[in-house]
Each structure stands twice: as C-alpha cells, then as structure tokens.
Amino acid sequence: DAGVIQSPRHEVTEMGQEVTLRCKPISGHDYLFWYRQTMMRGLELLIYFNNNVPIDDSGMPEDRFSAKMPNASFSTLKIQPSEPRDSAVYFCATSPGETQYFGPGTRLLVL
Amino acid sequence: GDSVTQMEGPVTLSEEAFLTINCTYTATGYPSLFWYVQYPGEGLQLLLKATKADDKGSNKGFEATYRKETTSFHLEKGSVQVSDSAVYFCALGRGTGANSKLTFGKGITLSVRP
Image (cartoon, rainbow over all chains, first blue to last red; front, side, top):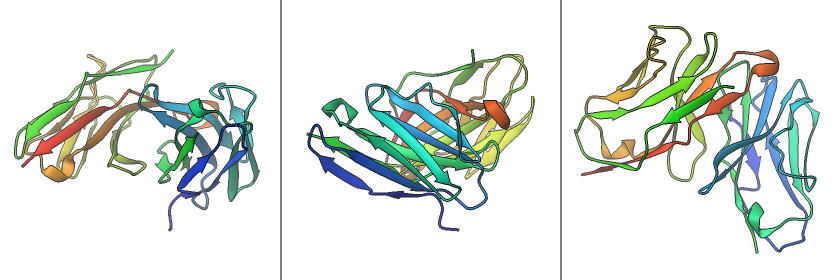
C-alpha cells in the first residue's frame, strides 16, 4: 500500500491567495483527520471525517478554513484567504478504527 | 476531558544510553495508549501501543507499559542509537465511533549524539 498521499508537499503563496491541500487516504480506512503542526502550538486536530461525513470540526480555526471529503478516496483542506499565521505543516491521517496513519505533510508558507 | 502530559524537553543523550520519556494521562474509563515518533521532515508513525491495563507495547527496542494505577505510559529503551533522534508523542485514544480521535501530548525532542 502506498500509504497516505498528500499534495503538494510544499506550498509557498502570498497573503490573500487561496490554498488547497489534498489527501488520498489508505484504501479501506473509514476515518480521515486533518492536523496542523507549528512550533508554537504543536500538533492540533482541525477536523475529522467518518465515512466521508464531518464528525468534529471544532478545531477549525475560523471561517477561512474549510474541508471536504466528496468520496472515500479524496479530501481537501482549503484556506481562503490565506494569512501569514497559517504557515505550518498540515498533516492528513487516516484510520481503520483507532490507530492513525499519517501522511508526509504539506509544508505551507504564506508570505 | 482527556489530556496527556509529557515531560519537558528537549532530551540529549549519548549513544547507548538508557532512555526514559515520561507520559501521564487524565481520562475516565479505559482508553488505549500510544507512542508515535516523528523523524525530521516526516509525518508521525506509530511506534507502539497498549489497549488495556498492564499491557506492554514494544517495537524497535522501545517498550512502554500501561499503568492504570499511576495513569502512566512511560517510554523506555535500553540503548539508544543516533537514528533514534526524533520527536516522540504520547497519545490517548477512545476507540471507534464519534470519539475515535486521538489526544496527543506536546511531544518531546530526543537528540542522540555519537
């Protein structure tokens, strides 16, 4: 299995631009999680899905952030408009039940 | 609510030294406990886990025992290597369903020098 696939691996953009991060989960995993990691705040859970349905989005920082999972093999995290404080590494993780498997992350820099 | 507390870091050791990284948790009931490791530039990887009291998880020479009486899940390794340099996260899980998310500690950076 290829594991969790995230794209792009690196993204540099300017403040105000829209950013879309993508995740392809491991086949058969019913749960998908989006995390953000920074030096200041550590690892934060933003949102998670079960069978493509959002279960808990209480970690989404504000309305500029949105996440979708249109089918079992694809999810997106969108930031519009982006701000410099959104600079972080964004991880997607998937799970068949309890143990989570992380992707390599997308390193986002907003100038 | 659930919480995980890890010892303050960073930790620097010489190769072949003994490693202990403390982790305690606050939770009701019987959660599962995990250690994840993050190597530089990579995502987190499951290192080991334990699902009930007195279980010992082990992998790659690392061990941790689920101690319900002390609400702890300390990570140990008898002889660390330079390749063990990474960030280590303790986490607590509640199984499947609406509570399937993990609660992570803040992580601790381990550096092993030759």
